[in-house]
Length: 428
Ligand SMILES: *Cc1c(COP(=O)(O)O)cnc(C)c1O
Image (cartoon, rainbow, N blue to C red):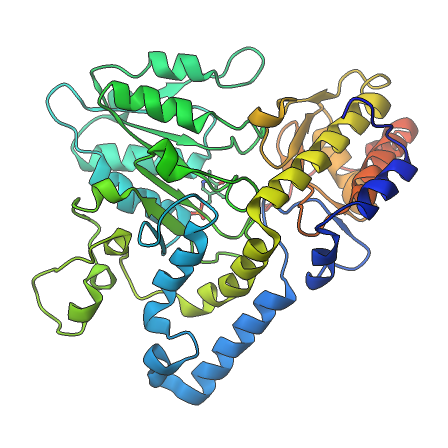
């Protein structure tokens, strides 16, 4: 995009040429707001509202019979959402199931895939992963009577703030049992080379899994082609499934024989589940890692949300998302950084290394974030110094991105952020 000029007119032109522009009106955009926080909580669509209301009405009218007689019977809801989601991650039906929540799914899968044995006891992860992921890994290590200080190896970022895939590979040794990494690092927005890491892990006889919470719904995945062993992701970020919506997990079919250890009755072979046997007869596929009854009310929005994503096409979403983030970083580079040198973009500039958001760093990020909010822009603060801006392909426009840069420049030029206290909210 080097030839792009970063004017308001070119933003308008990009909006005119945008094939996905029509999807915006299917979302509820908070009034008077430029919403740049779709990587923390995606927005409600009319499609999701419809699927929620249908399920509410089914509960009203069908009560218990809804499990089998609802339009989309609740008993198979998780499997059916799994089939839909499999299409956006390069998996086969049966390899993806809608279940649990992100962190619960880490426990459910790592408990099956982490089998410390002999010399192979270590988990390789990275110091930049979401804290909940690290807590879960430590818990899984302790559950085996082992010491996380010894067995959890965290790859460190380079001086430039990025994880270097080759350095992660150096940590894969004959003592490594599994590797567990994010697809996209949640603060810097760096996209890791999943195919390369998987290949290198397998060469060394190591299993590898990914937390794709920050890439699902904005980046196409090729789990089967890459040969990833397992993955999981939340559905309330780019997938727009609603706060705390039910999450997803993927298990490569070559691992269907593995035993779930966080075992529960919804992991049963469905034909046998209601025989209420004390012997656990597992589902033949990823379904066996389900634990409890699916939270139908927290799953209903996913039907509408996945429909929209499939209709738009994940490749088209990625294409627009890259244009949006490249336009945004270009604007910041042109308008902000030359004048305010303390600003730094901490997201990789290369398309193939960038997720769906742009993270900027400034020592006054907390107050700048407040000033942006006072102007109706919803960014995402990662204290102490990072502001993340996530223009979502399904509902944001290039003109909004332009306005964000315009407002940021005005805030900095007027020193407007100094009017704010910098006190932090409990949720940011
Ligand atoms: C959003 C996110 C989570 C959130 O975990 P929950 O269990 O859904 O609360 C965990 N890990 C990563 C990498 C995330 O992006």
